[in-house]
Length: 237
Image (tube, rainbow, N blue to C red; front, side, top):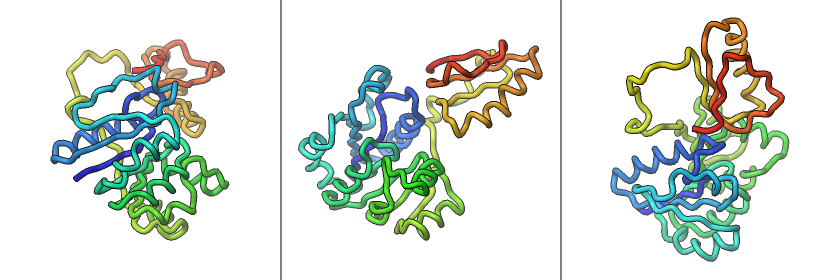
């Protein structure tokens, strides 16, 4: 099968959780014999932090803007057996219109941010998807399952909403037997909606137990956060 994926990033895991999921998923697709092209918008913040430029399981290519996407990759999108567009793809609504008008195979939207997406849709923020284009995808893949799938189908007209949970490559992410350096750790980019939970589940225990060691790894945490002395910060892994 020829598969084209337009995602937020494959080349850089900096500041996003998409790259790790896409890498694991596409590697598994390739192991089944599928031919994969990943198209990524060339943006400076990922360009400066790339850690996967030559994946051995797919072709990774970059485009500058929508005209470049149409000109350089329209033929590949039209000839693919399936095309997947990911959440937070820049100008995602216009990308959706282009893909839905061009692709001759199955089209899917893969939402790796479903709760954020639904909140944005409810307030009329159509940064990367809109109610107009949701019914145009053959499949809506969501990293959140359960009743959320009913909302996507019933309220927004997704023809087939299905759960596709985030995954990791077990060849890379597994217990190694390394000596434990911290008692509790958290890995994730800063997000306003997650910070209260991080405060409650990690920072509050750290303040209550100064004899234990904690670590938070991930970028974009504001300087205003008051980190306890026993919480180590790692900007990027």
